[in-house]
Length: 303
Image (cartoon, rainbow, N blue to C red; front, side):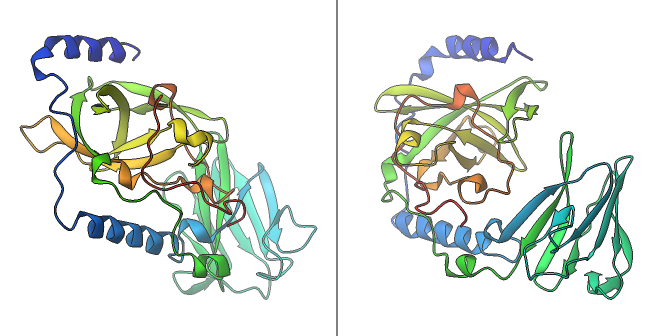
């Protein structure tokens, strides 16, 4: 598992003829700025969706056994005041299974149908329950089992029109060489809860900035590569704990793709405290300033 760095060095030594001159700015279309603006707008719409990150209203860790819930001050799990009756029911967490039992005269639904009780987690699926503007389900984070709550009535989310960002600059859309890792390669990733996992890393992206070569370890991101990166702007202008990016794999038969830093975006923990964001691994904390992409939210606390 720890041999991947050595493997990458060997690969770099084997291909000196490639040089770094081919890793400059990538070509962009005439409507490139419009493309970035469209990407930004799609991101705004995603964040404002009924269960987008901006409407996340709570994460409540379950204790083994019975957990009462509702808006009452005496509940084990207290939903926001005024959003649900004081006593809404109980979550029963036993042997890795979460059962919800609804209090009398409280109409909680699943898929539009009222329920008296339902399984929220049984080792596989995590169905959702709803009460008026609220929607919740179970999330599993290593040894933590919790209820994730969304509130669709959120004025700040309604008024959100995007984060501060650097001016779009085509120079920050860089060519990047993708260097595959051995199949079993993993890297250690820590989240904001202090939990650590060994995540599969398909490969490394190599690129240049001002003639200097940098690399970023990539994670699996569905059909794309997922990047968690930090840089010198985290000290003053961008979110302190880094930013995220998605990168396309190179086309078949090629080794070069594009890494567009104009699409570096804030992780959800930059604007919502009820998240479990992953943090940049040490090797992805670049000793240079990436003056592109989203900046630190102005009012990130409690957005």
